[in-house]
Amino acid sequence: MNALMQKLSLLVQDAALRNRMLFVLGALAVSRVLAAIPIPGINALQLQNFFAQNQFFGLLNLFSGGGLSSLSIVMLGVAPYITASIVMQLLTLMVPSLKALYQEEGEVGRQKFSQYSRLLTVPVALVQGTSFLLILERQGILPALGLFPFLVNLSVIVAGSLFLMWIGELISEYGLGNGVSVIIFAGIVARLPQDLNQLLFSFDPTQIPVYLGALLAAVAVVAAVVFVTEAERPVPVTYAKRVRGMKFFGGQSTYLPLRLNQAGVIPIIFALSFLLIPQMFASFFQNSSHAWLAHIASAILSWFQNLGVYGALYFVLVFLFTYFYTAVTFDPHQLSENLQQNGAFIPGVRPGPSTQDYVGKVITRITFVGALFLGIIAVLPIAMQSFTGVQSLALGGTALLIVVTVILDLARRIDAQISIREY
Image (cartoon, rainbow, N blue to C red; front, side, top):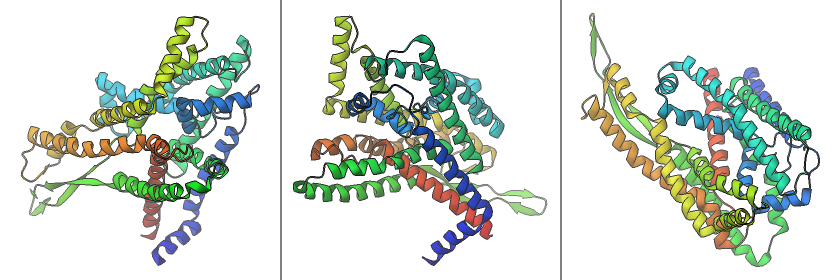
């Protein structure tokens, strides 16, 4: 306890660390103000009903920090930047030069790769913004706009998304933590008073045992998320002894920390995209003048509203995408080459292809556990709502993973900064 108080005291007293924290708070305040400025001509009642019936826009509202639910000027949030980053990482599988840029050219290569992601964000934001505005017009949430007002609104929301991306970059450079994640985290936290108010408004005294059980389950789920997020599989590594002149170098033993969940929250985003993009197109064509097209769109929407089917598909896709994304981001061949070049080896395993096969098998086994856990966490809100019948009780999901990940990352960064200053 004394050590914790000392660190908190140092956090407040150290000017550089205090300025970093204040910069993050100021940047988040700006993002929250922008999320409260709506675009004109909104039908508030129709908007509320639309979000209550559409899970796809509920997810996008999460990444916009609540800006989409109020149709603010930053309604797209950082979703276009996240989409562009995912597309760029997928392109590394098909474009060898991009893979070399990302994995082999060091910090300069990663900076160029990030710049390409920022440039790709612009067309992605234009496509998403156009789709949203057209769908909202068809749903009667926005009035039918002429070409010039439509282009003005599109320009405003695209500029808002790029501005949020810039704020995220500034937080990463001058603040603490990953800026995009911190912005999403702030949006989730900002919604807590509204969610608590909804829970209190719908409170049923006869459901007190259900609420107590949900509270205990929430504690257990948070503990499980923290445990799995921090879990590692240590692979022992030994550096061979080298003789230089009259001295011996090397011979140390260490380990490779292979994380149980290598993919983070990305597989959930992939799975939701595959499940919810068809719903977006169905929502677009639901009110079509062609009866057959409107019928197909309505059938797709009703099929996806079946929680059993939706939950099963969601779980399977999260499980598969965890393996897929781990394969994209983790290269056992590159790791094997790096170990061999640095005179390191895994005890009992030959350098080269044998090391690659061994690491690949370890990653496959631990990814199974991580994928299973991510799938359970992803469908837990659906299962909880179906089991309790209380729509305001939703444990798990993308929001919880983001909140836990950001808090743990901030705690590690603050602790590292404090340790540097103590020494």
